[in-house]
Length: 294
Image (cartoon, rainbow, N blue to C red; front, side, top):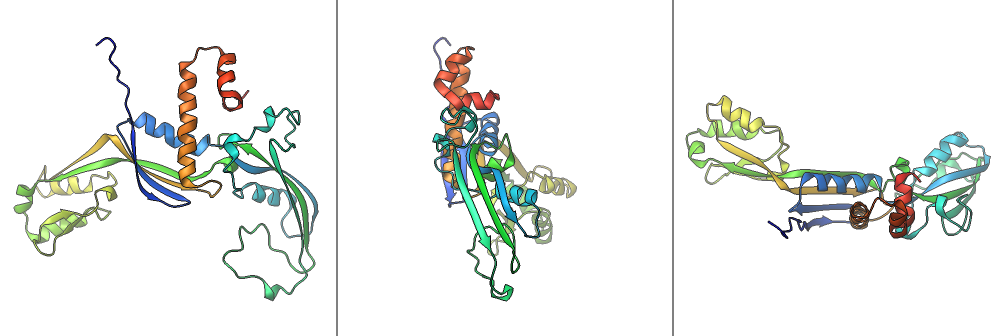
């Protein structure tokens, strides 16, 4: 119909939220949008990570390259990464990536003098870079820069991002009544995860946690093997998804989701623009150019 709009308005419902963990529902959209959001969270949300290491003194058991690699993988606080410049587009340093607008400089100078038996056993001592013995020393300078996980995994703010279709499960009560208690237990136990259980009062099979279902079809196969096809019906809702997000600590899980949505909006807006890359760059600047590899 002329003038009709088929645009969807996705809805988000937060189920659980911690600094490094988020679980939420995404409804009224399709799998393409859900997967796009997942991929942006993993590969295109920018963070700050150590990218250049100059080692002055290293008498530890680890070689220079190993220490530089470990430093790069340490998650650095990156709340302001979205507004920081990519070093290749910073004008103040001509793109060498060592100015105050596009980089952060760290210095580490440590030498071990105390007895190895007197080491700190605290659980809050941070990420261990290397363990030193008496007399060993490490001095270095490190430059942290803005980047995205698409360029290197050290810039990815996501430890893991998963989503699943929300399952809709219906038990045929009439067929269930024809099973003995032992058959009901066998059917319940056929699920690898605890989706169903036996009600201790009514002795009927009941659903405990529908989201524990892993789409393995084991309960359906068991019902068919028992001669009771149609005992349970399981449908994956095509417009409802359950996301689980864990961050590395560079940014909070909630900020990871919000930044990903913002970047996804920018990418969708870029599609609506003309094919003139100059016009797109004027609106999206360095982020659009960096994503294109320019």
